[in-house]
Length: 517
Image (cartoon, rainbow, N blue to C red; front, side, top):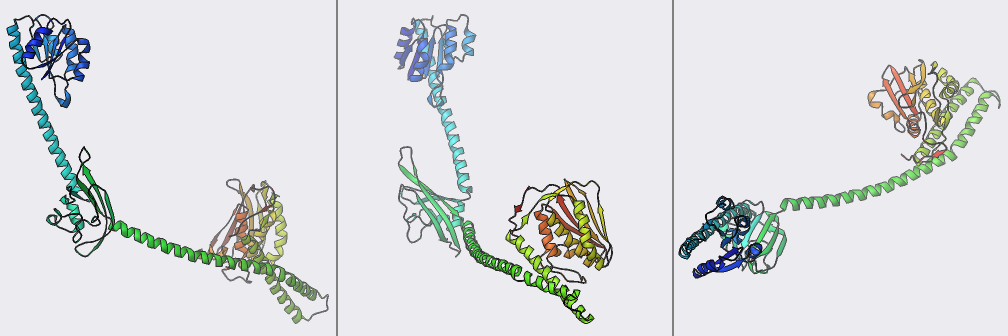
């Protein structure tokens, strides 16, 4: 055993060295300045401090800890004077009196030697107990993790024979524990774990594929195997993990099928989209043809009809005049239809041009009254205009606003039953103006409120039929003017169509809008 002798003046080193050496101790004598460094280089089970009390008390904590968790036995030389308490507080294990006879000092050293041996044995026993307890706790934790793992786990020896399995692996494979333990991973006829028949000692292995359960069901499993090595790198066995991923595999298969179906549907949609685009182009060509090929001859027909009714081409009988007048009305409706379809084609083709400018709505509405009075009087309705004083000027496309209002007032006259029609204009919220066209006619059923804004839809029973495009075009124009067009209606009471426009339109010059649908 090794002993470290730390002495300040060297007066005791010879005698102590002889006494310890005769007992078989390996003595390492150093000064106090080198004691700590020497103890780190060569830890000793016995440390003897010979020097001033303060120096001994300061060195004691630095010369105690040994490798492996043990502690050195520290002895101090003290002649019985002052300072005894300081040594005890510093944790000194034993005290020798250097002033006694050599025989007494030898006896004291012999007692110290016995205490050191008992202390070392006690340290070893404590460490063994600690290590054994830690090992047992580790084994309990390992076993709990092994048995309660949500995946199957197995252990192998160096020859790839299974030495242990957990309960989850038994459930996945459907094989009894007694059958699996002892079987080789490379068993070609009855492999205990799927996919590892070609496993090689010392190498990793992986399998992802089907597994036929003994009950006849088909599973999909993943198996991962890795060798276990000791600190020197020598293979001592192996460990594998088996996981049942059947649900995940089925979900992936469903996803693949759904993806394929989605691609098929997308392809059908692409084909239908192309067909729809062809149809839209054909419709646009038709609209263009109607504009150029129909509007001109219709206008000519109406001109000759008006000449006939005016008598410019000769007098007509009353029956002839009535027939020409009916023909003129039908021709006028046909021209309205052509004009509405032309507007719709421009909207859908994105070729509509807006010309925003500063507009006085009171002036626009007064002018509109003069245009619409003959129309409303023909249906027996009185037209009333109410304009809020000091309305701000509005920057908008006056022609398009006029077109919307002409349509709304015309509809109010058709469906108003000869009752009064009011046009009101006032300031709205958020820097807007609101124009309302109010009639006391047949009203609109709740289920038809939104339908009336669809293309070619007309509800109710007016005295004259229309194209069914006026409200659809009007709402689209209102949206393009950055406003809204809505309606409140009660059957048998009447309807209020409400056009809301911003005071300032975003653009300052002519705008060609991409407004296709």
